[in-house]
View 1 (cartoon, rainbow, N blue to C red):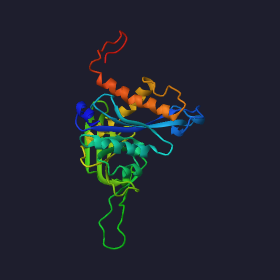
View 2: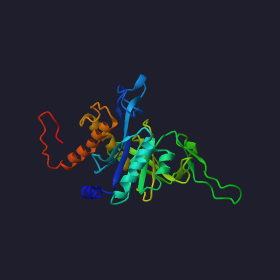
View 3: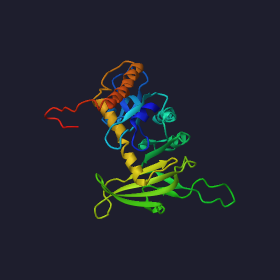
Length: 300
């Protein structure tokens, strides 16, 4: 793995993206080890839940732009595991083999105390999107010398601006795609169940040309690690996380990953193992494939 990544020569720091997806099998009542998974396309009883398999993926994002994602681990989440436990296990397997310390990006589901505490000893920096209804806590005040030391400071509710302290940094910039952005940074915040793991929290807001707020929902990001990039770079790093989401769509629609109806979990796993191999082959062969679109197709 280390040799492959060095040959790719990713721009800047090594960027990883993690997430999990569903292989829906609601009608396979005799299929072993099925679990209940979130399924936005429509599930049982009109609810976004389906019976099937969940698969966790940790991918390398090789380019500063584009939608390529190269899976390093792509494995089924067993019935005795959670997506967070599987993601932690995959990070522990991948990070020691990397040539340098990487940045990993994670979606809202991983913005919780269990994921933060379980990945604290792994040599990787993390950028995690946070739910907007979370309540964070500032660092505790200096010990007065009497009684028990305080673990938390004051509340920092993401939905209640009156609880926010003065930001450590405020930046406004013009993005080519998103327009005018306002980015604010707060340091030394933590979740209630992970007080020993402080994080830097970033709020990204889209503004109208006159500087007023847009209706679009703001984005909250957390950075946990050793070498923190600038606020602008953190936001741009997180936008590249969507590469793993594009890969799921590509694997399901183009590689027909979830099309077969296998009868055992072992068969499903062997078929799933082919998806990263095919993706890497396509990536490595992209320069020797001539772009020869049909008359009605767009050029690459």
